[in-house]
Structures are given as structure tokens and as C-alpha cells.
Image (tube, rainbow, N blue to C red; front, side, top):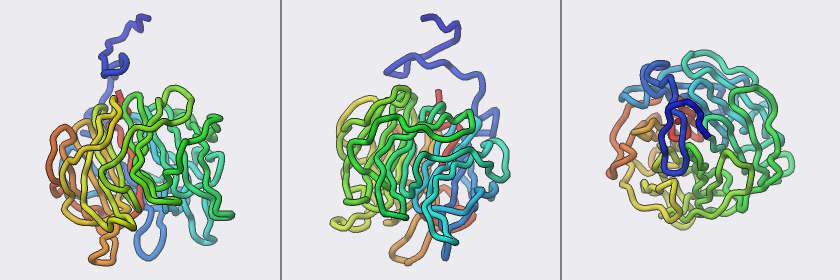
Amino acid sequence: TDSAKLEYFDGNQYVNITTDSPEQNTGGTRAVMAISYTAPAYTDAISFFNVDSTGDAADFGNLTVGRGNGLSSASSRTRGIFAGGLRSGPTSSTNIIDFVTIAQTGNATDFGDLTVKTEGSRGVNDGVRMISAFGFDRSDWSYSLDLQVTTIASTGNAVDSGFNAIDNQSYCGHCSSHTRGIWGGGSSPTQKNTITYLTISTLGANSDFGDLTTIGGEGNTMASNSVRGINFSGSSDSQGHNNVIDFITIATLGNAVDFGDASVLNRIHSAGSSPTRAVKAGGYNPSANAETNLMEYVQIMSTGNAVDFGDLNVASRSGTVCTNGHGGLG
């Protein structure tokens, strides 16, 4: 059908060309990061940085409730959402969803609730809806495979899609294109190198995509543009810590391919991207036995080792990032 709008073909479908851009709204792709944990406790802090330029992160505001240990995140051109996680005082898993307006700094606002309380959940999105899955509820240590759907532009509770994920990939890496959501790795209840995918605009179960080059283990993370997904590995019981970076072509199926190396061996880091860059931020450095404020980046459509980007404003681990210019936005 004729949409009467300018479109381009992204390899899978025709996508409307948007009439605004991150450059207009925020001077480049802005990444907003829920910090999650900074020693010695979980935190409500949110930071931000410009993916298109190098430099240090700065304070953005605060979540409605301090929490971490695995949150889902998603975004559109204007809005970012953060869902689930573990809070302390008293310690409990949560189903809280918050949102922020990416172009503004300030505190998050209540959005609604997930259908179940989860920490270790992961979300994929196409700029319109987030589909989140995995994680567990600490009250009974039960894992959830429900695929939950949240519409980013409107506030309200998530809805159960009626489908379950085919495998438990809690604490995995996650990234998206305009059409596909990708989950890679995972550490609960067993560590794995599995990659699965789904078509975000339709409701259905995920399917096998291929394998990462290493076991995702504890704390691998992913970021993407509309073509490639970049995986920054973490650690595993069998392989230990590693600094491997590998990549997949999102529109095709198959195993990940070596991309290069990160500068340090760490885990539980976070990642965000623009159409050209993927930035890895924070994490736990085992050699220093401490959280790090290190940020480094790669050019997504080339291969090679990561390069220094700048520093987070606070050393942290197990956070999550959303941006207004990532692979899920047309």
C-alpha cells in the first residue's frame, strides 16, 4: 500500500524516513544509562553521554526507586523506559517501569508495571514496543519465560503476549534492528552461548539464530545498528573472563564472527549505540576487584579493537542503556 511518505528498504521491509533526528533533538545520539550498582549498594542514579562524540558521562537524574541486577530497557526517538530489577531495603524483585524524556535531563516518572516481578530480564524493541523476557522473582526464585509487551509511547502496564521464550537467557545481551530483536548468551540457570531472535512487530515465540563465539556467561552485553549486532563478552565458569568482541548480521541467521577485543577483561558492563558506534560502559574489573568507570567504543560496520571513549561519572556495574538513535529506530 502507498503510505504517501518517503520510505527506504532496510533489507527486510520498507521503513518510513523520520522527520526528526537525534542531531536535531540532542545534538547527536544520546545514551541514557541506569547506573544500577555502585559500591556498596544499588542506586537510583541515571547518567547520559553523546554516542557520536567522545567524552565523559554526566548526571541525568534519578529513577523512582533505586534498583539493579538486571533491568529491561527500551527507547523511541523521544522516550526511554527502564523495567524490573532488584531493590534493597527491603530486598525484593520489582515489576516497576519508569520512563524518561531523552532530550531532557531530570528524574524518571512512573510508567506502569511488568506482569511479573523480575530481576535479570532483558528487553528488545523497534522504537514502538518493547518485548521483555527472562529473569526471576526473588520471593520464590522462580524464573519467567513470559514475553511481555510494552508500548513505549503510552504509559500503562505491560501485557503478556501469550508466548514464552524457547530458552532461559536471563542476564543475556540484547539488541534490535527495525524488525528483529536479538538475545545472546545468558547466565541463568546455566551459562550459554545461545542466540535467539523474534520479529518485534508480530507476537510469537523467539527462534534459534545461532551461537556466540564464546559462552556469554555472566554479564555479556550487546548493541546494534540496523545491520549488525555487536556483542561484548563477559565471563563464564568454563572460560573465565575474556575481552572478546564478536558480531552478527541481524537480517540473516548464523553464528557470531570475531570482531576484535576490548581493552580489559571485565563483566556485567552495559552498552548503547548510534547507527555507527557501539559504546561499552562500566562493569566489574576482576583484577582490581572493583567496579570501573571505563567507556570504550567500536565502529559498528568495521572490525577491530575497542578505543577509549571517556569515563562514566560514577564507577558502576550491571546497568542498562537506551538511546534515541539505536538500530531499532528508522
